[in-house]
Image (tube, rainbow, N blue to C red):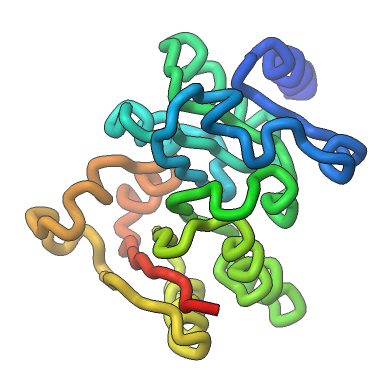
Length: 226
């Protein structure tokens, strides 16, 4: 296992769409911050990021479904991200990138209003009270999203966890964010046009949860105006 991880780490270094900025680079100024469209994607298409992308299959599948958009997977675990980076490299996907950083540092990788949408797919629920701020929909993380998200930008959440889903709804309500859609059983009515695009793409873990009979929840919202 350790040898395979090292092999994946080494291969990640060879991908021109896989970035691993260190602390010095993050704090001195990441070269693509505010310049993803101009200097990497070479287009003006919308930029969508996936927080905690894991194996990156959701990012890659979205890039296939929406070639007119740019997708960037964010995670801290390079061995997991290797799968998505490898697939997108082998398939020559021009609208995919991966950045290996801690999620707290997204403001150092993206400029003000550079991101059009954020996907949060099956995040760690962080059930213990002292770790509330680590939840990807906590007020602390919402403040980070506000730094990089365009006005009117959309945040999507998919989760199998009731606590996390209800917690997010409460955060949205308390902060006067704009809830656009909520569904506590995403697959109950797959013909619903509101969910069709959402269920067409599944993460690795989503498939596992569905096989186990778990209920998948989904919501999307926009941030309140400052």
